[in-house]
Length: 51
Figure 1: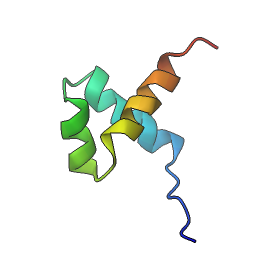
Figure 2: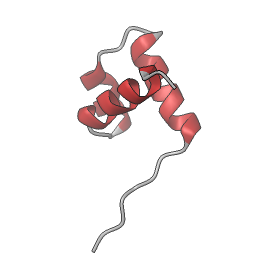
Figure 3: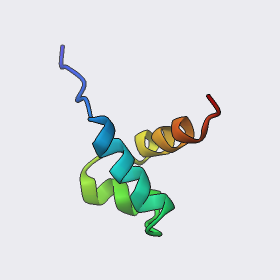
Figure 4: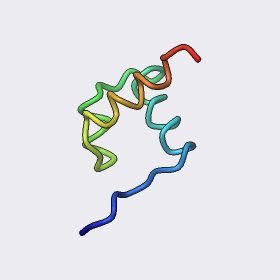
């Protein structure tokens, strides 16, 4: 069984910033970083979820 890749909080925040602050599309940011666009969508949703 393969292990899931884990990303640091800093990497996630930097990736989210590409979309929200720098105008990248989710798919463009995800493909340039080699991650799945759906995973990036989930990270953005989790960041915007009220605590």
